[in-house]
Image: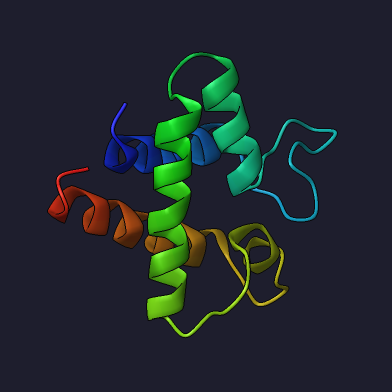
Length: 101
C-alpha cells in the first residue's frame, strides 16, 4: 500500500477504534498513531518499507508545522486533540500523494 493510502488508513483505524495518548494500544482498545500503524502492518495492510515512507512524510509534515520531535512524542502532547492529529496525518498523506507515493 502506498504511504498516502496507509496514512488515510491510519486515520480510519483511529476513527473506528479510538485515538489515545501514552499507549500504542490502550487497555480499552484505543490506539495512538504508532499503534494504528503497527495494527495495519501486523494485519498485512502495509509493508515495513511503505510504513517507513509514511513515517517520513509524517515527520516532514510535523517539521513543516515547526514541530521538532518524533511523531509518537508529538502524539502524546497534552495540547493535542484527535482533530488536530487527524489534520496533520491528512496533510502528510496529501504530501505523499503529491510526490507519487
